Amino acid sequence: MTAVNLNVTEIMKALPHRYPMLLVDRVLDISEDGNEITALKNVTINEEFFQGHFPGTPVMPGVLQLEALAQAAGVLELSKPENQGKLVFYGGIDKVKFRTQVVPGDQLILHAKFVKRRGPIAVVEAEATVNDKLACKGTLTFAIGE
Image 1 (tube, rainbow, N blue to C red):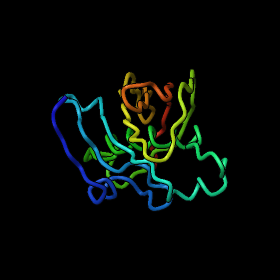
Image 2: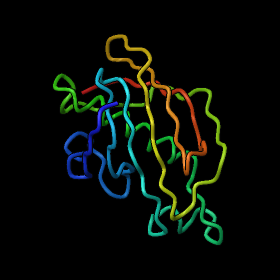
Image 3: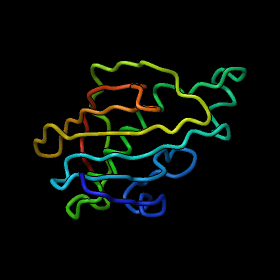
Image 4: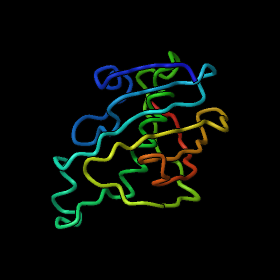
């Protein structure tokens, strides 16, 4: 991996997402071959989903952890000149496992690796960790479209 530090303003140039659905705060690393990315999501009590998701015991919903992973992969793919201005859509989610709860104050480290590409379809192996402990992982399939 090569040290890259993209801030949220630079991330918004690649991704069409905006608050409250923008779930990537910073890109930490991108591999030299452009197939892997490591990014960061700071989890704060101010997140809107905590108001309704176990309000007395705030836990980040697993589906939003997966969305954060997908967005990290999207930053990598949509930053490429040939994909700028396009959108990335879920094509499938497979082999998902959740291992530990993600709570306010955690830093969710997002790692995605593209393992297969065929035309506009891409397959990504992704995992999210908190304090070096696996929070979730899965295989994500994407379609790149207009």
